[in-house]
Length: 618
Image (tube, rainbow, N blue to C red; front, side, top):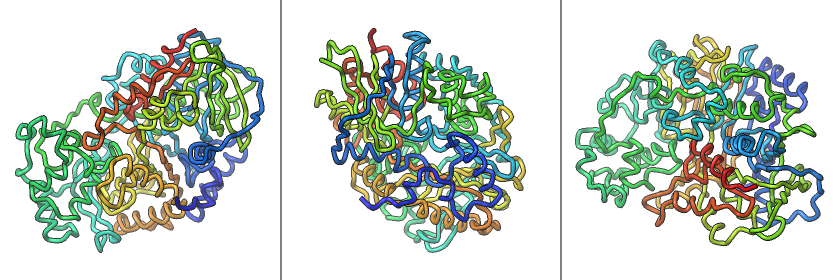
């Protein structure tokens, strides 16, 4: 593995953004962070997400088998210890209080310096204006189809879906002439070319974002591709594409998407490489690993599918806060530790101050302990008769011991075999099947978005860049929060990068491991330089200059990102079936998280938390 830059070990320092931070922004942030006790993690810039300080102890445990001997006994005893303060862990604490009583003593432990897991809040104060963005988990996707337990949890949190539908401005992009485009970078294609055409549908993520004005077939001529590649791309985009009815159902799951493309005459490396990157935003799996059925469900080119665009907000991807699902995590924290968060509604949570100093107060019924990595969870006694669970965690290099009646492991499934050594070997193997996809969500705050308006960019597919997707800020206004309405105002852009193997042929999980190694070897400087080159090449013709116009960068690096959903082409057994075995209770230790449901979604995280809590016995 490549060396991790020293900068990664500076846990959340403001100076990681270096000269990119304008003086006014730096002063605003420094004042907020140094005066608050403890600091306020959402305002921290630079390399965030899963930092080295968050995963160092876990890697020492899993990679080197390190043992922390003689942990200090805190003397603390709880009814429940939750390992992991993501959506699933926080939901588990909530469900536990409903099942076992509000007087239950609960400790939630997390290895990061902020709660929420991938539901990470990126907050910026630019010349007195707040800008919010999401550092990972973004939306309550298709919430009207949620199961009973997750729907009830939304009601418990006073989340009304209609509020989202009114808060999202569906007319924003069209009113400013912004559309979905494709950007070919000079580094990859020899010259910077912006083609106003949609090849990947970012309009799903940003409802109301229209496709670029060019017809796809006509747009091919202006792409910086070899003539042979252009000819093949035209074949792929024409009516020669197959309908679902023309492909037998049995063949869909047994035939690879790339074999199907070869039969169509699509073989040029430039086209295949572009297609590999089209699928990653959804599951992290490149298109060369997909079956026909998986490619069809992912709306990849080559199939004729009826496309109906709904104007009903309830059917669109609009059910999210300006900071994504971080506000859902905040609502859960307010429910569990009301003294830490002011307010009483879903609207006011967006702007509500949150006092991190009150998350872990002595004597409180619910405590949330950050910067603490659980390295052991074991039953006190035999599995059938154990009455307590002994949990050991590491904080600043020192090990501490706490005890509880029950324990919910709401962390990554693959680390659980190392943390709970008493599990049966077959269950450990099933847990390790869940290898998560790595990804990066970078938030880039720019002084104004005049260049986007001039070039007509609201979203972009960027096949030649590390960040293959760029999205303008979400036009959502809720609880007193205002998104930018004038191009002269600052805007927070989202850049999404999924590292995939340079060469095809690896299984998805092998590719995830390779991508994770690449991410761990990248410093903030690497990300910063790539982002600046990307935006200068793409937005430069609109008058943009990265050194002048970027106000702040927050890189949310998630080495363990999307839960693995499985692969028709590489897995002999359904990942969902394996996950069902892997989540089996072990005495008073139960397993939650979206990994346990083999699906990276908020409702899965909630439903698995409910199931885990209700497997516990008095």
